[in-house]
Image (cartoon, rainbow, N blue to C red; front, side, top):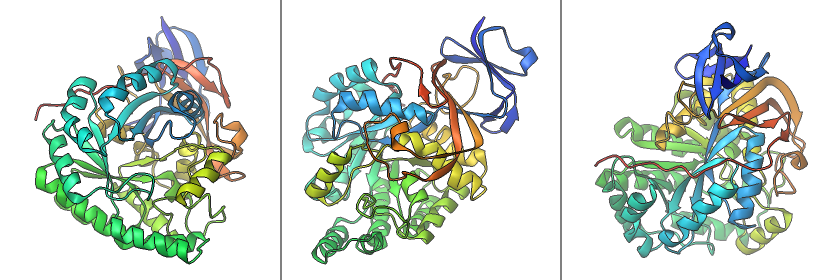
Amino acid sequence: MSDINIINGKVLISGLGVVETGLSLSDGRIVAIAGNGHLPSASETIDASGLVVFPGIIDPHVHLGLFQGFEADCKSETRSALMGGVTTIGCYLGGTASHSKTLPEIEAVINAHSYADIFPHLCINTEEQQQEIPDYVKRFGVTSFKFFMFCIPGYMPSQTNDFILKGFRNVADCGHRCFCSVHAEDSSMMLDGWKRFFEQGGTSLGEWADCNPTEAEVLGVTVASTLADLCGCRINIVHLATAGGLDKLRTIRAHNPSVTVETLALYLSVHSSSDIDPIAGRWSPAVRSEQDQEALWDGIRDGTVATVGTDQDCVDKAGLEKFIRDYGVPGSSALDALLLPLLLTGGYHERKISLERLIGTVTVNPARLWGIYPQKGIVAVGSDADLVLVDLESEFVVDHSALQSASDWSLYQGRRLRGRPVITIKDGKTVMREGEIVVDKGNGKRLRVSPAPS
């Protein structure tokens, strides 16, 4: 007997699209995909009439522990993620300490407290971390690393091309499954622009966009791709924000398809003329024009943009004010809970992008990219029973107090979205139903990937 049967709904199946079928779940896995009358008997039946079943959503770009501590974030922000059907998170781990010393404790915290499964990306900021890259791969099963061509001044130094090239070589030597994400903006252009903005007393998002030149991203993606080409390293350009950067990457990918592209839900839902708090929206990379936003949606439509993340580093109002005071730019409000509704509202309803293409950016594409497919990212027999049941037509108004996050504000407060997660299932267990978390403890775990041979 199965644990749960899901009947009377429609299911998004990669390669087939949305089909009318049922699912049977047992021992944390999908064990059958069949019509209602052909499923095995089950202890519980979920009637999914009027709903579409997606694979559990993967947010590949999240920061935990920057403000209220890693354990607290693990408890609150991964819990909030379930509200939006996010069951797997790619978490960036920064700092300057040896990751070999910090990873064991971080892994223990994840396994004890997280509500979502987590795969880590290790930021490489020091020579010691550079030298330890093979150890991170062999001992800890980490295959994903990050380098910063530009980083927030005063928070962490930007890295030289020489440092990045050496890092790319070290990662490439560890096997084809290993690869690097890159914050790809030219640091000299960015530093000049930021200096100009603050010296001139800029306030608006338009002024902020003007002082974060498109050319910095175009040059950044060009240099990063060239460095990767020199040593055969796979790279992922993260949080792409401009039409110019996207155009350059189309050209680059025509010759080197191993360069992949991510954008953020923020850039797809907010632009420099949006009616939002200009200080809370002063993101890095900056939100750009409405034309840039439309170009990014086109990048999803034609497949140039492979994945969409949030870059969430959730803060409360006090943390927001402190980060702005210290660095001039803000942290974020809760975003994981809104990732899927923002994509459905802007991509499916407003721009008529197909569900398979759109949802693929937060399911099958990141699962393939980070080596967790077909365990994650797909509805298939044998895959993890991580699912989200969605009412595509249901509208709701964003209220930060309903997102189950430690953040006491939202950039999207009062915004009406269309496409509401109704039920989230994690490892075959219902964990969210109708806006309520229905488990007392998370069942998340740290995911490991074995590197392929060189």
